[in-house]
Image: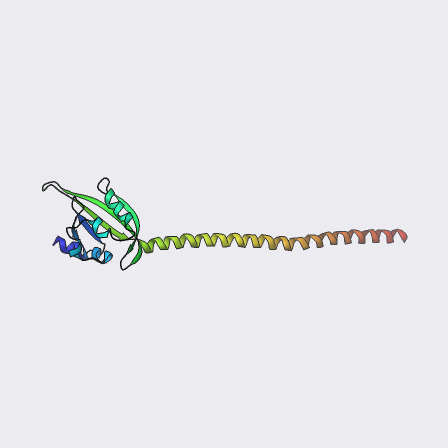
Length: 174
């Protein structure tokens, strides 16, 4: 039953022994890496993925899990999916009664989430840039509109003063 439950899970996972050899993996894991159980069970995971040109981050994560169990995000080009971002989580599973220590690694493909985050940041940046451009345009338009209005106001004041002087002069002559 446990193998069937693990196999039914949609998230890729693999179980490694103390020597980092694969003891169990589910169908999602095999699909993700485009490998078969025959190529996987009993093999060191580093040997399985080591022939990929950009598997260095994954191999680094696997090398570090002996010292510290944890999470890491890596970028890797997978055989059938292309460039992907994977969130790897390693958890030590100790069975003290039988003296077994295994490491469970779950993989979450976060490529789309990362892409959405990047697009969101980019859209926010573009919106802020557009808002700044709009503010600059409005400031320039406001200046351009105020300048003639100020000139007209000055001209009106001069004309009004000249008209008043003319009226005063005419009133004196009468």
